[in-house]
Image 1 (tube, rainbow, N blue to C red):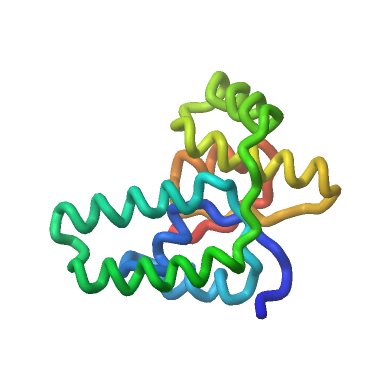
Image 2: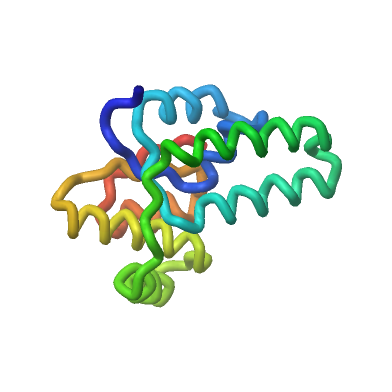
Length: 145
């Protein structure tokens, strides 16, 4: 069972299920830390997997296996609700950084968790733009790209 909790962006969790650069490093991080993320993670992850399936980058049989594994994994994730507080913080972030909306929701979720729980979380991402914005927001960033 993983020890400490860390915030995982979808860009890293995707590497758990598909072959990408640094996937073995991402998997090691997921084994080492309990996955904390936004409640949008399963939706965003499924969207990424479906896009891969549609362009034949993921075989239908592999997709079905991944869906089963994803369902089992999801039960072990700590998913944070997208509250008004998270959305407000995300809105502030998109005004000062070149973030996409879901990336801003991830960073805002991590910031709100840290503030409300009074704990420091590592923010693990494989997205360049998100990496810079998370660091600028004061998060301890782990690069998994």
